[in-house]
Amino acid sequence: MMMDPGNNCLAEVPESEAGADELSLANLRLDAASSCKASIDSGVKAGFSSLSGLQELLKCPTCRNSMYPPIHQCPNGHTLCSSCKLGVDNQCPTCHKEMGNIRCLALEKVAESLEIPCKYQAAGCSEIHPYHRKMKHEQLCRCRPYNCPYAGSECLVTGDIPMLVTHLRNDHKVDMHDGCTFNHRYVKSKPCEVENATWMLTVFKCFGQHFCLHFEAFLLGTAPVYMAFLRFMGEDTEAKNFSYSLEVGGNGRKLAWQGVPRSIRDSHRKVRDSYDGLIICRNMALFFSGGNRQELKLRVTGRIWKEE
Image (cartoon, rainbow, N blue to C red; front, side, top):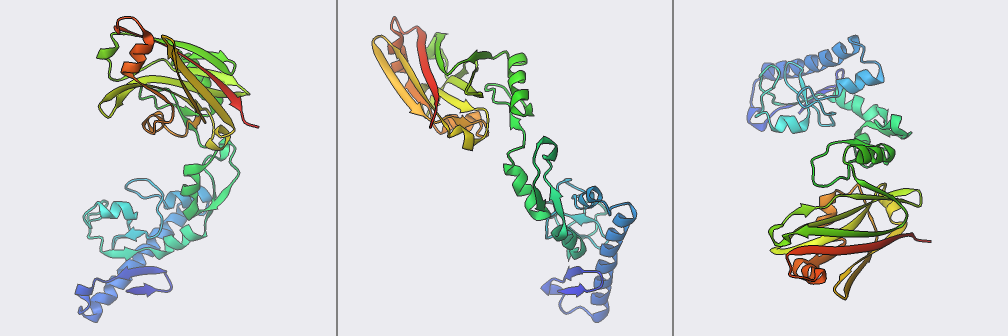
């Protein structure tokens, strides 16, 4: 393992080459040092003294994600992140030279010294983090956009809550209600032919917040079931300030559930697969529906309240 203190570049020599002559080792060290220095120098000449320029310099040219130590480079100075290096069979994707085990410590030092604003700054986040912690913060940042909570489609729309409420109303045509109580009737003809169905999402506005009521049919193992649950349009810490109850009944019977709404940060599928809601098996649901079991007719009532 060799390091040129002037250029801060490291070249790791495999043990199998430990017996190489002094000239070969010297050449490897000089090549690594000069190419690493050239990479940094060219970045500075291109205007990388600015913060945005330094961030661009630290992007992997292959996957375009930010590079974090260890940062690798080929003998010609082309840099590569650790993830990409594992997938290129030790061959530089830019010049096709053998990558070896050369690291560019100059870029690593740049990465360690940077403090960068959160990328959601425009959305209201004022936090500044060291470069190596920035990604972890952004994965949990309260200002990051929410995914559309509509189930039953591969909607890729993201945004803040007001934007998503408008999107749900205009693009998905969901039912919008004001108030903290609800009374919904779900009907399905030939329910025994349905193994996977999602009813129209309903959005309730109360206490100045928005809640999504889901109701659907799916298989729990091999048993067909119906499930109703509530999601909160906001953060999990805020969702825990509320509780809700659900009741499903008919034919003189009633089944009740009480719980805490889940944040839409948790995907619809994640909440459903955790069984965090009111679940009724199909046979019981058809019994509640009465008649000849040829039609599902369930009434789901509920209430949302704020915990003191």
